[in-house]
Image 1: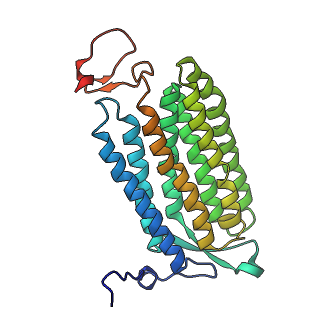
Image 2: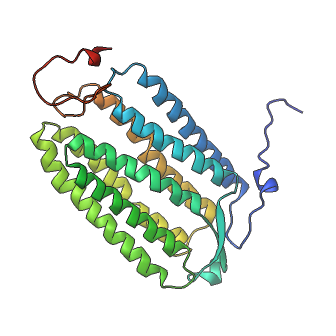
Image 3: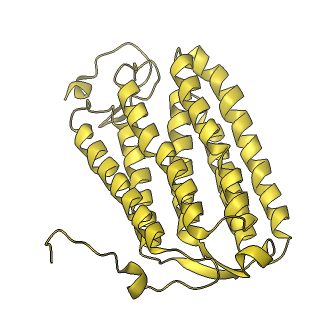
Length: 275
């Protein structure tokens, strides 16, 4: 037997259940996504040593987001952190029961606010608005989670509540935040990053409606869909932020953090920034 032969026995150790369940190929895909998150985490950690002191804010934010993705996808790849839920839609074709992985929603509870925090700090909006946006993302995710665990068509009511929060979040990030970003001279980069995030976010209700909501596609295809979206949202966005941040004036953006706290936007010498 080849020493390089590797067998995924996660589903033997943690067997799936239900009519729609995670397959071995699906587990393999999720382990691949886990590896990408792990690489992103290590790469961001390594890059922090090249960034100047006080200019590692975005590195730290996306390290946390990558860590959440790493843990969540490892759990899902191992066929853990799920519940067996009866479905209300398409039962004649797809069956009555389906594995619903709550680890997916736990991942979003961490990663969505991390992205909102990064965009908010970059744009220069108030901390109150940032907190408001973070809470909107939690309402969005909770709406989806409650809907996924609802065994009747009342689930679509919770989905609608979540979508309302999503629409409000999109409105703030693409209107008010963009106007503020223009005042601090970061409008082009902010619009590009926020536009990209919101474009990816627009596909989440489609993926949810086909999977945990409408029961139209199986568990493995749904993970391929969500996995691609999550990779576009965290690893790709993380490297885009880190790349663009090299040319940003942190002092002008009022996000120059030092060992003494946040450097005010004023004239003066701050030698600790050079360490």
